[in-house]
Image (cartoon, rainbow, N blue to C red; front, side, top):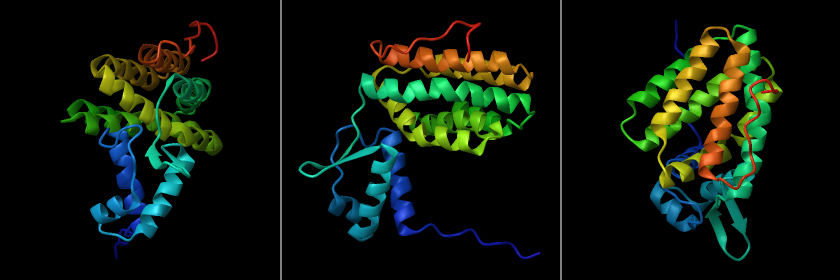
Amino acid sequence: MTSVPTPIPSRTQFVLEEIKRRILTGQLTPGQALVETELAAQFGVSKTPVREALKTLAGTGLVVMNQYKGVTVRMVDADMAREVYDVRLLLEPEALKRAVKRGASLDAARDALTRADAAGDTAERSLANREFHRALYLPCGNPLLGRMLDEVRDQAALVSAVAWAASPSWEREAGEHRDILRLALEGDADGAARALHAHIASFVQRAFPDTGVEAQREDGPA
């Protein structure tokens, strides 16, 4: 049987993914200028794919385009964190609850957790953590709900990267991830959703104490 060759990503897609990776792993920091000519030289491409990639990243909220200041990595503050994490708190636990109730496979979440535990640096761990959360909500059975969470996924990862750089809390979060996955695999949809809600809320509270995001009671909606 003839195998189907893996599509070669376009120059724009390659540049897009590489800039995103550098932002989400802290190699490019909030407020840092992104100069088209410099990036084009680094990636060995013309300015056109760089410009298109930056436009896409602006649409996802990772970079900011200013007529006078040019393009910069988005700054992270308490207001931005509150907006992003409010959306996650409203949607992500519900998505996980639905995934568990429908008996969806969580193998991808288990694999991401294993990669995070085995990560050799913070960049690898950050990317694995991002994949872990996505693997929990994506099989919820509602594609629109999954896409809505995907829309804030990169911004949430940026908030996390800034918070971890200031105060690493990997071990605590790894333990919480294991608890969430254990409950989900046991079929405890409500318990897994509550644990995920508490996990998200406690993280943003620690990282940005003045966000006003509060964990709900265990008997409240999660």
